[in-house]
Image (cartoon, rainbow, N blue to C red; front, side, top):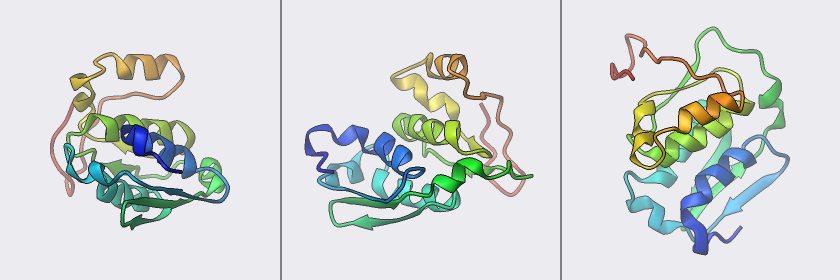
Length: 143
């Protein structure tokens, strides 16, 4: 998928691709390496924590979907997603968390930059939103 004209949306497409059939190649998003963080690298690292097969490309990302993730049992310990204080990362992983059990997003307040009512709206759509407390071996920031 050539996302040159809408690069900021690649993370949401990646979240949907993560639980879809097949492999999705998202290209022409190299500018996303120099936003609030290196978003391509961050997506790859955080997707891998969730069990999503993916890799960086020269100008993008390749995501191999795994629809079975939607059926997995909620783990005893959630997968902690670090959005790196990036509002778009947090919101995109909320999309993934709506389909995959056991994903916890740190630094939820980072969405206040562009969409302060995001978590309220997400909750109204059925996404479970609760206070976050970091495990002792992870970052200690809380919202």
